[in-house]
Image 1 (cartoon, rainbow, N blue to C red):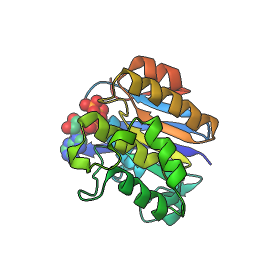
Image 2 (cartoon, rainbow, N blue to C red; image 1 turned 90 degrees about the horizontal axis):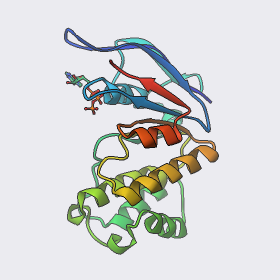
Image 3 (cartoon, rainbow, N blue to C red; image 1 turned 90 degrees about the vertical axis):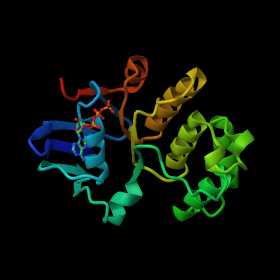
Amino acid sequence: MVLEVTGVTRRFGTHTVLDGVGFTTAPGRASVLVGPNGAGKTTLLRCVAGADHPDEGEITWAGRPIRETDPRIRAALAVGLDDADFFPDVSVVEHLDLLARAHGDDDPAEMLEELLEELELAAVADQLPGTLSSGQRRRLGLASCLVRPRELLILDEPEQRLDAAGKRWLVDRLLAEKAAGVAILISCHDESIAGAIADEQVQVGR
Ligand SMILES: Nc1ncnc2c1ncn2[C@@H]1O[C@H](COP(=O)(O)OP(=O)(O)OP(=O)(O)O)[C@@H](O)[C@H]1O
């Protein structure tokens, strides 16, 4: 099961944002997209996640073209792109519980307790998302990707708004994901995080 990105080109009007980008990511390995603001990292992640489509080129997971409508693809990909939308009227723990159950975990209580502890969200587990700090919302967005099965984890600048402890947690967690055989594709502006987890850094743009 390999992510294969081949010759991906994406244009907005006359602006060519991605020009023939290619790389592969395999289970247990991490590709990190690096490059300046506006280089096209989010655009590329959106194409890989099936939320946008390249004008040219091909993106496949396990040999299947990435399509949001393909249940096999949806089952494999855990995606955290921009700020996730949360159900406004269910608590942090209820939100995660719903997601876990939707993905087939009939008894997620213990897993959720551990994850909330790990992410230092236990104290706010019964709050509504709208009452969280921006960093706590970020943590909830990351937790939302971790309560579901995943073969490929796609995150856009997961380090954003995390404090120092949160960034240390992120590195440990991504290394653990790799050790568990998950393929990882993230964009990242933090050189030390990128260096700690990347098997390959993919330069996007200049
Ligand atoms: N839907 C769109 N329509 C027109 N232009 C777009 C669209 N989406 C992205 N762009 C442009 O594509 C370029 C790349 O944007 P993108 O968000 O992919 O960059 P990025 O590398 O993720 O940047 P950052 O590091 O700031 O997050 C930008 O110039 C942006 O304005």
